Length: 255
Length: 75
Image: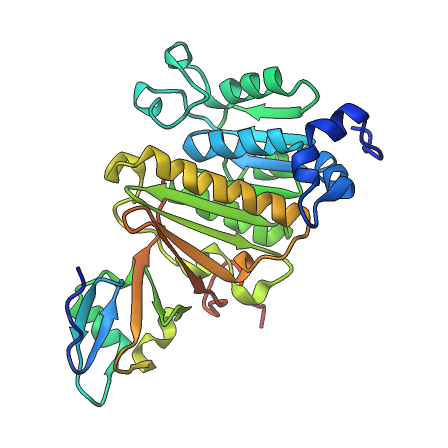
């Protein structure tokens, strides 16, 4: 893809309300048009992040999900309808985005992320958003990001609660996802096991997309050194300060 | 609703007081007392994550706020 060096008049008008924001500007918009973001998981969080990032003018999105749309997804996964059921989520999201944003570059993969395909599917991206629904995939993405020095924004949600953090190769002293969670819980804390409030998926996905835009625009944030616990019962957000875990098998320093 | 704080206590997950001895209590002892599965939880004291290797030497003081949580996988 050719690098965007100037905004067209139409693009300037289309993105004018965000270009107005402090620290964004025309240059920021050009930056976004030249960025490539991968979204792993095209369910609830993926629907939200893909919608907002495409809308904000990200140049290229890679979408990865091996799941098909199920009836129980519809209350919170608003890009799907009854006609989508049994279709691949990655293709459904890509089709919807392409209709809305004809100039958006898309790579869609209806396959599960594995150790064998991670490099081919996630190579050459500027940022990865973990929107997946299981711990093995979360650990796999984290390892890849640490090994390849790719920034990662991880969000998750179940029940009335969510978690949000950024793992940045520029600040390894705050550790990675596995520093924080060395082992997965025996019983997965997922929407399938705990249920989920649809609006909380929207809240976490929106924060994740907002974090992605601020990161790509190089705007200040403390997300690289914190995990935010988001509580939909008390309507509160609690930032907790992270640190590298010297025992972490993923990111500990070689002796 | 959160009850009144006992004389010597730490706050667990913003919703429960746990009484401690005046001289303090090890973080690892609190985790044992709460019957939590150590391997899969993260713990923060006063908004700072404490890595597991330090739980047995971290002495909690009256009024400390403890968050205990595990990874959420859902997306």
